[in-house]
Image 1 (cartoon, rainbow, N blue to C red):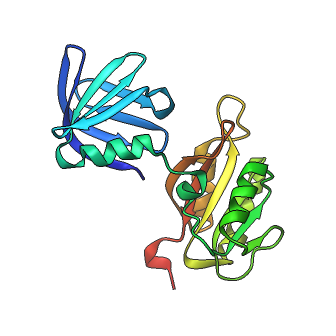
Image 2 (cartoon, rainbow, N blue to C red):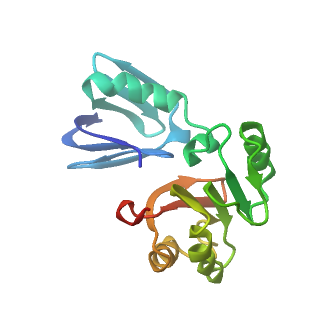
Length: 204
């Protein structure tokens, strides 16, 4: 999940208290009015006096966040890399199945040498699983057995109108496999990824 905070937001002539959320790909506000500002659409950002100012094509929004305003500004200016979003740390044991994204594979190889490409090794910390059809999701129960107790499976699949299946299909298959969904991240312009983990109470 991203960062969130209760705050007051000013946008144009509008002013409202509500909840602000800094997600992977957008800055969201939910109050008496709503905003969903894609990070890639933000042209200017600064934080002074506890107020985050974000400029995008529709105007400038001011978020009264207090002490965390500077931290949010820094996160917007320096977005996490794909590997950071997936939680891949140096030396981690990772398995990549059904994903052939060259840029991702190159970045991964620079961060860890513990990469399985066909069958995951026991005690794998992260499995990146590319699913092309809803039937592929039947493998989740099998893949769960290779994870460390706190490990994660990222299901990578197409997004948008041409998606092979919907997020709810991933959530349903995860539940059948004894997994829960905890996070969503943009994998590429064409693909999204859902993070699935073993529930804490079920970890051995």
